[in-house]
Length: 414
Image (tube, rainbow, N blue to C red; front, side, top):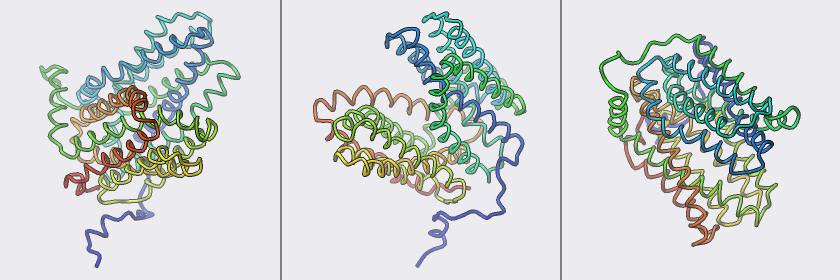
């Protein structure tokens, strides 16, 4: 016999009368600005890589530039979260996008004018990465201020599906621009997208989050940590994500190509990666329509599908088997991403939301280099296939462990 609670826990289609978050002008401006900015950001790494290599054939130069861009993102994330909770998030996004437009514009000018200066480009990318550290926490905290609570899940699903589509299209567009008119113009396009985003964010008018008191940013960061560790379902899921990010990046990003080169080949590996991206995009769009009352628990359960391609790698599966496994993993991530964002935005007080989200980002980002650095030595000691297989088992365990907590299983959506 099915209970009423069981019925509520099952996914189902929403009423056709439910309105779209895009009908709310504030969210519409935010969505347009975010979409344009994401497109430029997706193009930038490809354009920057080939532009640097055009001027300097040394891979070490490219490594320094990319490191300069990514390092401050981790270093300044917690400060970015405190600032986003202290001031108007729309103002933070306007200023950070405007600053990014200036830094990328100067980089584009240097590349287009043939004035290659590694130190100057590194400095500009360092500033760009710092600005991103302020942008991300503000973006994660602003959605509940732009839409009604009943629209939060749909808003996150819409943003997620757009982001995943751009992740596929952006690098392709950058490659076309690099080949046809040069990487410098792709960086210039990136700068222009930040300008458009800054204009869109200026159309929002949101109040500052906290009264300005005689308190330091460090105090705000500590307060964010206190809030983060006091919510069991938050730190339990973040701990799970830290472990799964470490396993996925180390095995999928480092060992995956190594195993694929010896089994299915580079071209087939590209097909596998495309299958995962397709699963992610498809499920992100589906999540716009379905309602699950226990949304976080459902998302955490689906995230466990990410273990399947790791296990398949360890078993040296054929390209078709790997592609299906990767597609399923994409579906799992496509469910989890909006489920996680929506749960945070519905249940964490908005006044500390950006700080809590910054701790989430910090632990997630720190796990990535650990996984990448550990994958090679561990594979040398135990064998790449064996590490991939056992990593898949550990991935599944890490996703299921938070479900032992009632606070994760029973957290209600809506």
